[in-house]
Length: 568
Image (tube, rainbow, N blue to C red; front, side, top):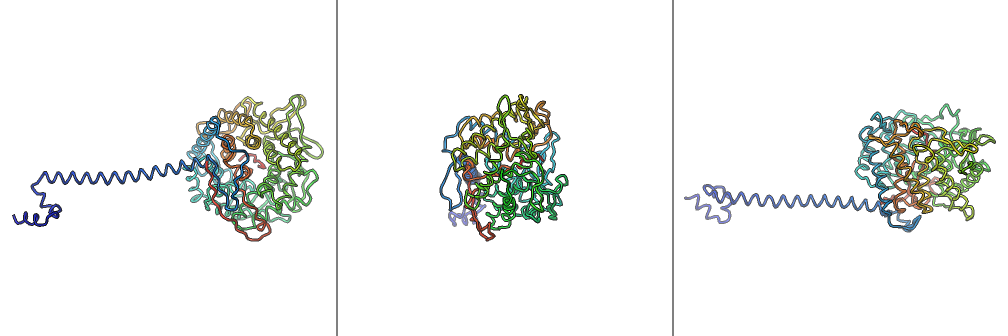
């Protein structure tokens, strides 16, 4: 009785006293129902909040992907003018479908690598394992970073980024190819920085570049082609007779100049520009250099002249540094050297009989060899890119026409085989046009690279059709359940056991861009290195070239949306 009065006397507080509910089952039940109801309301609000956050996250991802498609590129603050190579057009439904197919191919290649070879340089699909072709630097991961980013594969990109942050280690007692490491690793990391703005990639690029720099410490400044990443000991391979290779010594300018621009440290640019200065002092009248150069004297050795393996990307970089330098006075000598070399190239151009396929010969001494590497199929794209830079419109038209003729030949490298995939090189014979020389195919990108440039620069959709046919041939002959493989023989279709890292870095990227709007990585705002890693064009800082520290304004462009190597 006294307990009941105490509860009553306290008004509303009686409901907080457990004694109030003793013997009152209905009231207890009501309290329980009230508790459950309040809990459900709170839980519902929390769930809605989490769902809202999830939906916002999804929307942000969709916005990013839409930006990737629309090409809303934000450059450095100084460059507010938005230029386009071609007029913006609505995406063709067929192009969109084909682009998606290429993206799916990239997902298949990447997922196979993730499953069977994660952290290794390259995947061996047939044996379902990985191989370290480049000293265990995770070449496929670094080579794929910008492709993943451009395609909007953010989950895969972030996993790759995490590996770079936690597992990429350059402190290896390994004799690395200075060329391959530059175009794949330095180029891939700087490109990923330019696309994402993530400074992790720039720091890693500096680390590996610093390990490569001793290769340039020669009497002439022409670099050695092999260097130990831990000890810095540099040398040339014995098979080269002590000489340095032309392409491997002249295909670091883009990457190292970009690194100096982005860090403000002139040492990288100074090393690579000295190579061009030294070669330019005694540049031949026809602009054609043999593939071997003495690193002590900088004098060419008696050897082959070619736009194929060992020579090709030297000429490519003469043009691309000029474009990368905003075509300014500081890089005028690059353009002049390139034009001289293109006049020399004309002396190597012949036509087959009876079909009049245009091809580029190799030269030894005074004699021509009627053989053309598939590697030389980068030349149509290079010529198309450089044609517009001629002051004389007749010259521009001549070289663009040559580019188109060579592209037709390169496409027929593919069309002429039973698998519709090209061999490594072709021999041209009188009255029989061409025949396959070395018959392997290692998923090379050079022809589709040139088709990409020609489509972007002419708007001719024929080049898209040719590219699609090549893609379908890869799908039919090279796709396996565990990735993509090359062919031992393009005549029989016999498969090899390697998915080259450049298949993800170059072949699939160029095919994807071939069917993308022209605003995605526009050619007047980006330059592709020889491994297809796009580098952002920024205002040329000649002070860096003269050794004055000049930190380039950091930027975070939002991409909305070789010598070509012999194989790893």
